[in-house]
Image 1 (cartoon, helix red, strand yellow):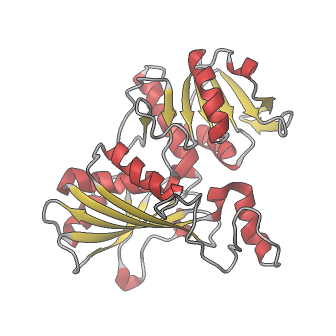
Image 2: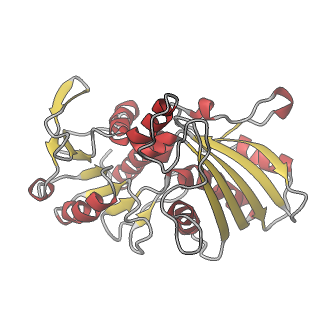
Image 3: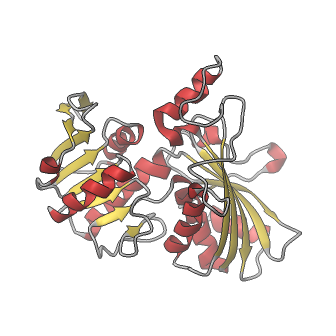
Length: 329
């Protein structure tokens, strides 16, 4: 008997988790949906049944669950994930709270698998997830010396309010999710600023990349930008490799690996676009080109749906991965 819970089931990512569980055929015997008190009592139709969303409380978290998908924010996860864990559940958390805790697994199933020193597994940052998959392929084939990121992140990464700021900004409404209008604008600012001038989002990508790729000495830098796009993040990566490579060799590497989809035909204006990625599970890569200003350095353009591979899909893939490791499937 497999008992599965989803905390934050009424949010954008929570609903995507349910859709993905259904699409991927994840088996369970009992499903419990949680939310904050504000959304508790809401009815959700899923696989022919009607579920009443329960308020997430300490008492509820002490019940027995085999697996818990958490998408309820960092402070909520900080409080409730250890309660679920103590009661015997494996928790897969979508917030940033646990990612850099030393004994917590930070997992992208195409790249690594959990050790389970603790029963809390962290989902990485959305932009990190889509980036480390092609980086892992490059690391295995050529080795990595340096990665410089520039992200172009969709407003759905800020939830419902981010989408509202974009859609209602066209009518002149003041933003709620952002410090400046996002409609017809670009914000070089995601999350709070740190003392060194980087934002927390940028530092997340730096730290998480090193942890996932198991290379504390890897040189990584990032600039994270919010753009007026509803869904799907785009990431530019400037990658310096250890072994000599060529554009053709990198294209062939990506072409031959099912973990990414190569779209790289500039003569026909074919390259990854956010609108190609939206609603799709895949990570798309293209615009592979050599940087003539740096030794053995190449540019890679990458797009992916931030609500799917960047959040809900990755969490469900981790769930499937853990179930396989534990022999549940």
